[in-house]
Image (tube, rainbow, N blue to C red):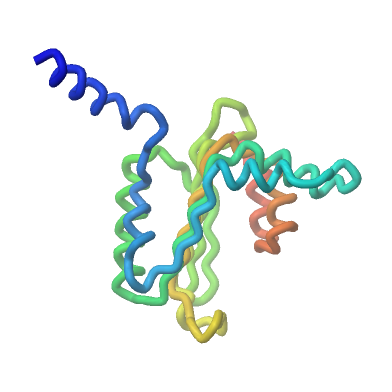
Length: 183
């Protein structure tokens, strides 16, 4: 009886020890979904390689990246999967206490950014970007026209250093406005 109680107690504690699943993880194994998952170990490896003291921009990027625990990117060209992603994002937003930071609409394309505030003024623990309606754009990657992109970045993210990330990853300049966010 004591063994069963111990096993049940351990089973209840395991989710609290860092093995947390994201509501978005279901998309990783779906057909018609491309995914890129970068975990803390890979981020630590990349930030430990090389000497970045001579390049301030790269040094800033590495400092910001050290606070990132994970990056998840899911892309699809399938309309049904895109609708499921949209429904999952809406469900997540209701329960996750994220704040809409900004949105951009250009014809049929919608880009929305959400954050979860961190312990410090200019830090967030999550940055979520959801892009929908891209199918009609002239964005073609290996013959695929993507409909929807979902990006989740978690950790201790310094909003003042987002500019370094946008430059290094060639992301839209609109993300630089994220660093200007005030609580």
